[in-house]
Length: 351
Image (cartoon, rainbow, N blue to C red; front, side, top):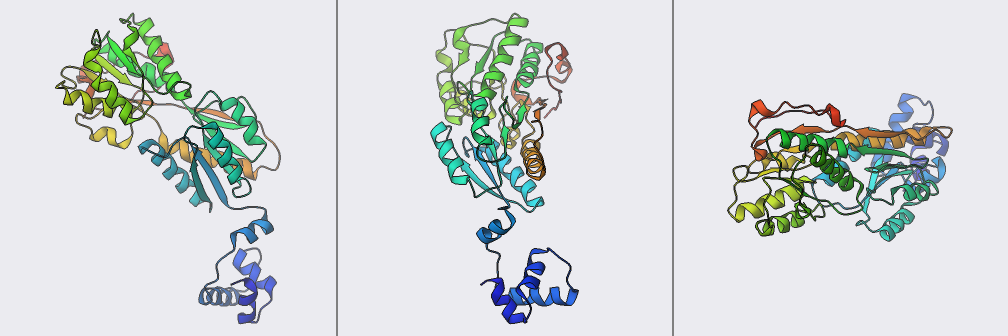
């Protein structure tokens, strides 16, 4: 069904039908109502490809994530979709599975189907990625820092990790292990750097085995928890680089008979919704997941609407320390200075 059929049914010109259905020009209210009623009766729907040829816009935004499993990614997708819909855009989502070759394949597939793309690629390849993206379409990079002519949004991972470590130190912990994220991942590397900076500054005890390998998955956290008792010397606190690993770790050590926080303090990062419902509720570093997704859409649409090239904007989102039962913090110990480490804002919450 095309607008020509609608024109024949109403006895109006194709140009008039086009103006009504595309909202491109003034028409009488009676004419507009007649066209819309006939279009509905004939079950006319706009043809996306034809409209894109005419307007040079698909009204679609691409979203490329390293994975789509887990609450963090689902929250990002949800907020991107809500923000896009507010501007009458639709979202096409795909995953690279953290594979550079797959990422290139997805970008090729999206070319011509979307007006711009939001890419989450928190790896050391992010600077090179910027040049490749610019050659294809307008883009915004999430969770990575680009030195190219492309907007980027990042999280203050280092400051958040510093705030958490300072909190654990203030509770009296000097034997703190860190459950790492994947090597070469920007977020994971920055969180590890924050951990190490406080370990040095606070003169905490250091042991190589206390930097435990992980990959941001619940499974890697569970494996670390299963192997925890085998460590030659046990720490008094564990800081996981994300909440998914922290909850996997929690499940494993509880199965081994350890009490959290009685025998071991535990903390995570991201403050995904499930962290507050863990048993015990998980102390975490809150990342503004929703704001990150919405701002990415805002930046991308601004780029699409700009008549001339503009300098790239790089923004770092602050994080908040959310204190719950899992670290065993009494209320009187929550206040501690973190400004010397250039850390993020601290929000104290007791469960």
